[in-house]
Amino acid sequence: MDLDGVYRAEYGRCVATLVRLLGDINLAEEAVQDAFAVALEKWEALPPNPGAWIVTTARNRAVDRLRRESTREARHAQALLLHQQAEPEEVGPVQDDQLRLIFTCCHPALAPDARTALTLRLLGGLEVPEIARAYLVPEATVAQRIVRAKKKIRDTGIPYRVPAAEELPDRLPPVLTVLYLMFNEGYTATAGPLIRTDLCAEAIRLARELAALLPDEPEVLGLLALLLLTEARRPARLGPGGELVRLGDQDRSLWNRGLIAEGHDLVRRCLRRNRPGPYQIQAAINAVHTDGTATDWSQVLALYDQLQALLPTPVVALNRAVAVAEVHGPALALAALEDVQLPGYHLLPATRADLLVRLGREAEAAAAYDEAIALAGNATERAFLASRRAALGPRG
Image (cartoon, rainbow, N blue to C red):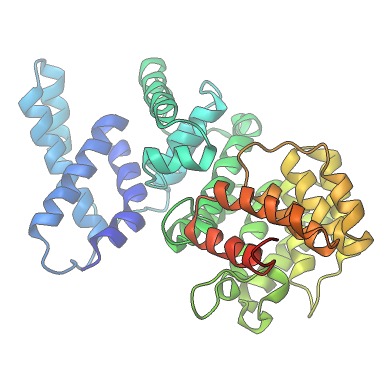
């Protein structure tokens, strides 16, 4: 019985449903955790609908707790109301609880770093240490951000709903950001297996829900296209022994052609709107990667130039340098990275190492690989970097 798998797949949905039923994030989390503890004791095999079982058990536990701890008539009334509600037949109704919870977590009254931490905790089921490793900050800092965000939601009465149409322009960007980050954490997990398919699938599902809600928002379509085109390559991302396979070395016959076709169609829909944004451009880059039998790096570089003009971040500069290397050679790419600062981000020294190898500067490359290995959080990535480092020989 894979209770851990159920936890990863259902935690976010169950918490979102309990927040709707209880109106209290802390109580919802505690109730879901209690329900999983009960499942650990009682389940000998998985029930037909594990998520619904967890929600029902969590709600009953919450009713008991409210009655036990109630000191006011209002608490008794709330417990009675919960008790009288019909049992949920399935988790994730058409008016998606998780989408509502994301908008709650991404309210503009909350600090951006708090939005991300809270969403990854509640929707992704990530533990505080995992979030801390992903963002290179102390665990205590992450825990404090989450506590403060929950308190602000409670104290200011931030509503648990999808905003009205007139509110969406201001509320949409952080929602897109957290869905993007949720998918990225699933695609390259900070710890454990390299890929968390449950988290990738949930980010894609929620992006689909958002696209159905806002079919005329090109950045929503762009994000969905980006996630689909990235997910399409996942079957070829690991080799037979679980080793990491770089994009250029992947067996393209393993790619999911259905997702590629859907992603390309979304990119074309975005192009017709002619309102380019960062997610649309990133989706277009991935469309080039998945078009035909080889990547047109000149086209990729042109798109990265456009992306850098809109989003001049160090990560964009790093990715652009990879394209520069393919078009103009490793020397120009290495020069482009001279002023890029990404403390704690292993892909920067890893990219430098690869460029240095191509320039024949193996001693410098070895030192860069050593730095990247020390920074990489995932064992699969560390093993890949270590194999590249070993290929240089004992003295680099």
